[in-house]
Length: 530
Image (cartoon, rainbow, N blue to C red; front, side):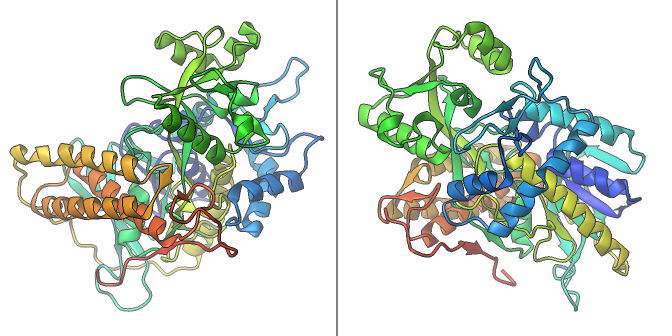
């Protein structure tokens, strides 16, 4: 039994920021991460972090841009809180050593992305996430109150309800698989923060790293916590097309610097779809590309920035330039082949501005959470900002909860493992993993219909039964746990999509092309006792 004041699941910007702030107030923290500590969605974030830092910009413009992108589903109070406190969080990152790119005159370099009316994206060239992650990890390494458990996989929460205890339900601890030893350990803590990122791996093509398997959302849902708006999946319009399934992200900032999308005929087609042309929000651009590809039968379209100065391109986008170069493409002189790919989940665990969920002691922060900031479509580069603000607020609420809660002395039962697994059966995992990704890509991607969603539901339910049987009869391992979570999250996406009888934001259905007059959240909560 390992006992802490706080357990953080995930090692991205949300989890690390929260851990540092809680530890700074004297609380002992365990960070659980299923791979190396630097392996997170944050580490792959190219574009930057949106904040009002220029005299030509103001909070009202940032709020308005966010509300417009969110298509009626943003919570305005949440938007205003996060936007207005952004400069304070940026200042903290600078103090921690994040060296945002500057112009020659010493001013912060600000870039513009789709949906933004002003230049307000702070960045560290085109590897902003990696720079923030490195600074946070350095600070964590220096803390004497934070223990990091790498290659440890969070399985499920231990709650009072799960142990059939009377009284108000609350978090007691967590079962965690030590990946190297195969042992399932019990961690005790009255506060647990889920900072596990998104679920991009439910799709065949995604810009997300392999770790993005929806673990936190599935864990919370199984514990009876409310989840909402899971149908709003943001597909990044411009991922580098290759013959493999890998999808290298071509940042939206490339279009912000003047890149033009072209179809197979070489036509700059975006003005036909939106007056903002190539700087339209991501959902508009992704649907336009999807439409052009289906009309022509093309496997990809083109992104053209060859009219810009070659030295500027290489200096501004060194990581993207080298990524293209490895595929034999010189983006300074050649058009880049691009396709949409799953990029960001706007829904998630229902969370307040204090990062609280409906379960006492359980917090959520970052892409795993649904605060109401993003609504039906995330405005570019608002996600790192949201994580910083919610981590700050969540640290306050966690410390307050700890200081005002009597420690629970309930004995936590050890994990009960199943029989030793039969290696011959592991083919089930790989087959079902592949079927899941194909099903979601074919039936639950950019443009949907009720019939496609029903087909997907039937297939996912079959996969759910097979994996449940496997889970209860064989020893747990990372691949099984990830697949179990992916199937659970896929089911939530489909059920939320079936609830929405309209097209709004990132959810487009041919059966309900119009938008309803009233914007409502789609809500899922596991029935008690199921």
